[in-house]
Structure formats: structure tokens, C-alpha cells
Length: 351
Ligand code: SAH
Ligand code: SF4
Image 1 (cartoon, rainbow, N blue to C red):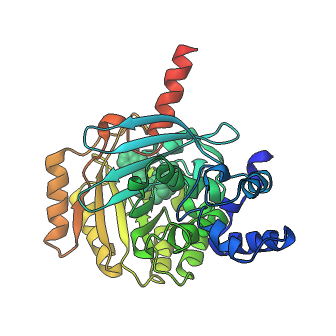
Image 2: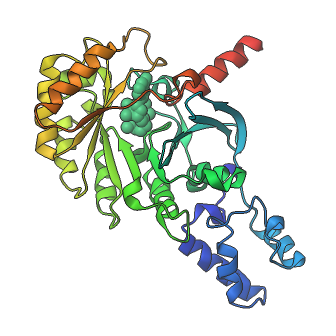
């Protein structure tokens, strides 16, 4: 399969540097060339080696022949009135994944995808409805940020969250490499504490992430503190029960976040808030409350804004740090998976 071929952009910067150094030696080039070349992958990226005009033309041609740099093709770009920008990318084999850039006063947070589709079928999630297509390669994950920098260096993200399509901890080898690319000074240089991996609680993946020496942040998609009710929203509860996920979360030194999409009558009652407060207290976690976006099952109703505030206050007075995340980019379908689903509907309608 052509899309699984390894390129320099699928390697950590250190591994890419080694590969380039070997190549430079074989080509009879001076040693310093490798360091000069590796900068062009992530630090000062070029769309193709032809753009690296500091290099002799013949060398650029050899590089393009031996190390072509893969691109993601922009399918759709949507701008929201609040500054949120949504990108739908086409991959080599035609699969489509999304990223969302969310600017605020001091940050540019990029929400990225780790899989095309998702196998886990959470009932509220548009990506879940789509089913699983395939894992992304490291380059397909990391290039969601690289493409932004190529388009405009000012768009380089300051923060990265794995909250787009897919379950990152079910694609661990690729996510592992992508984390290094994002974090490394020879990569995109984003601080580990500014990179968040969001998971429903895949235990082997949580173990692997906790074993990394950098302090990447962990967000657990909780959505209900009550196992039976969580199971009705998230089938994965059967395989990896909440109590084990909470145990595994204790291996993380850094503060953990609970993601909690509020759904009327399903997880927004006082008894839910009480059990949630108790779990959050046990882990010292803080809670992100998310208004339900459309795109998942039609039967789910978003919690009313007044009740969302009450729910937050219920947690706050129990000394749990809870914030209501603003629904950024609602006018452009910025919940994960929504843009792809919506574009596919539109194209089917036109066909
Ligand atoms: N699979 C991982 C990461 C991708 S989903 C996970 O589930 O954590 C990222 C976040 O988007 C999750 O917290 C998920 O609950 C949230 N999300 C999914 N569908 C949503 C919807 N319809 N409205 C609001 N948030 C949603
Ligand atoms: Fe997959 Fe996350 Fe969506 Fe659940 S919420 S279906 S795990 S992408």
C-alpha cells in the first residue's frame, strides 16, 4: 500500500537525522549537510526540497528523488466567525481527516486526528457513527500541524490536543512518534505540558503514555461516573471499565482532565455531579464540561445552558475545578468528525 511507505516525516527528528547522515555519507557529501537538511523537515519546513534554496540545485533534485516529502491535500477550509478554523484533509489513499485550529488571546490550539474514523462507537460522536477506516501514519498526524506552518508560519500551534477523529491510544506506535515530533526542539518544539492526549481509557496505551519521561497531559473522556450509564454511552466501558481506568490514571504525575459532554437526562443529574465530584477529588482532576454538539445519535438532547452552569457550580462548591468549554466554531461543525460527515452527505446529495 503506497500510503504505508515510510518517509523522513514518519521518523522522529533524531531518526530522520541519522537517515540523512547515512545518505549524505553515501552520496559523498560533507557531514554538516545532515543538520542543515533536518531543519527543513519541521523547524523551517519546506513543501518540497526545491524550496530549500540554500542548497545547490543538484542536491535538491537528489533529495526530491530519494526523500520525497509527503503532503496532505486540503479538501475544505472553513472559517468560523469566532476565529476557529477547520481543515478537512485528503490523504494519499483518499481517506479524509479533520483538524481544527482554535485561536485565543495567547494560544493557538490545534485539535488533530489520529485515525480515520473510530471503532469505538460512542453514541454522541459523529466519528463514532462513521466507524473505523484506518490508523494514520506518524507523518499523517504530524503533518496536520506541518501543513499549517507551510501555509502560514504565524499559524504554528502553541498547543496540540488529540481530540479530533479517532482514539489516539489505539494507534500508539504512530502517536508515540508524533508526540516526539511535536515536542522535540528539532521538531515543532511544542512543550510537553502543552500537548494533550485525550482517551476513553485504553489501558495498554495509558501505560505506554505514562512510561514516557516527558509530561504530556492526559485527558480522560469520562462522560459518566456511573459504570452502567457510561456503558450505555460508550461501549468501551465493557472492555476497559472505569474503575481500572481511574487506577491507571494514578500513574500520571501531571494533573489530569476529565472531559464530560453534557447530555440531558443521561449524565447531567445531581447524582451524576456528586459521583463525578468524588472521582475528580480522588485523582485531583479538573473537569471540562462540553456542550453536546449535534452529529451523534439523534436521540440525544443537549443539556440546557442554565443547567450546564448549575452543574458546574455544583462541582465548584465542592472544590472541584470545572470549566464550561465554549462551543467554539459551532457554525462550522467543529465537533470532531462533523465536517467529514457533512461533506460526504453533501457530495452524496449532489451525485
Ligand atoms: N477518542 C478520543 C479522542 C477524540 S474525541 C476520546 O474520545 O477522548 C475528543 C473529544 O470530543 C472527546 O472528549 C469526545 O467526547 C468529544 N466529543 C465527541 N463527540 C462530541 C459531541 N457530539 N459533542 C461534544 N463533544 C464531543
Ligand atoms: Fe471514538 Fe472518541 Fe468519538 Fe468515542 S468520542 S467514538 S472514542 S472519537
